[in-house]
Length: 473
Image (cartoon, rainbow, N blue to C red; front, top):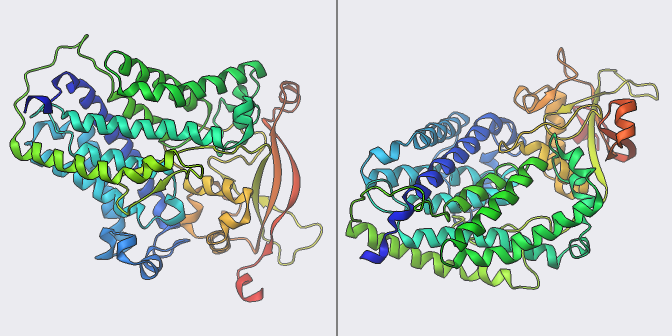
């Protein structure tokens, strides 16, 4: 079938697959380094307890067959190694079916992690990685030309990511329609980056231009993805530029990078690079791709309907395999930044003069004199959830007290998630948490105090808690 193949997109496929494998590599590495504290057998939200509560149909995972921390670590490390091999181009040196199995194994391993990750993995970019990763299975390798159907499905994913985000903004916070959201967003976003302070202090008219450009890129440009080249490629290029702007202004894990990767698959490099001779696609492969395309089009009904619903949902998955999902971001914008500061003391009794020492997190704001760091595309899961907890205690109901308990016991895995442990010799006797209002300092305040943040106490989040606080309440 001549219509099936798009040989001009061979370089687009190569860049897309290598870059997607790099995102997988970061995701699996984050799992390796963080899982014991978050979802391990002795973690804050243990996997074995979760599997006992949730039926198989709602959460298919390899860990239904067996779970131990060693087995989880082995799966995560296998993902790291497999992703590294794909980054290096191993799939292009193997038969087509073998390359497909490699991509399928990578997808299945990460699906198994996401489906037991609970609140720590309840982010839209997890589903986006799985959806893109599933399509990569059927994109082929150098033994065949890229299939047209899969390339169109990748555009459909990119369209939902951008258009969904644009619609949720127009339907959500009034500041998006008034073009004023960026007066607040750079300061109140979940995890600012090293340039966020400077973005926040850009002139307000430029903030209006940013928001207007964002609306154009997310509401008008995505439609052009389905037009002929070079218009579709130019639309993808505008999306890439917008995403790079977001990379510079904050830390959104791999969301921006994965969106860039999807946009690359739309670009036609044939005017600049001559495609090599590629073998014809085998019949079994063509039949399989057509069948998968038909399945995904059927599953696309609910995400498509969601786009045009007055009650549009953000970052929602419609099946436990995360095959076709709804996306969106920042339908509402916080005007004030609140941060939870966790502190401990080693004094035996709490009194008015008690000296409290703060735990410092790796990414989220703490010490006002510390410039925010760049971590994306790496995802600091605990830091992100601390931002949500500051918005409402309901976000922290299931995990915050277990987190405090592990600080009180000096749990090594939990302490490795933090930048600084103020009690290196022995665990504290009490831990408390308080909410502060944070705002970026002005240029003058920065010169005088050398602090990037100014903070004021708002309220108590958790009173001083000792190791036996659960029984004492």
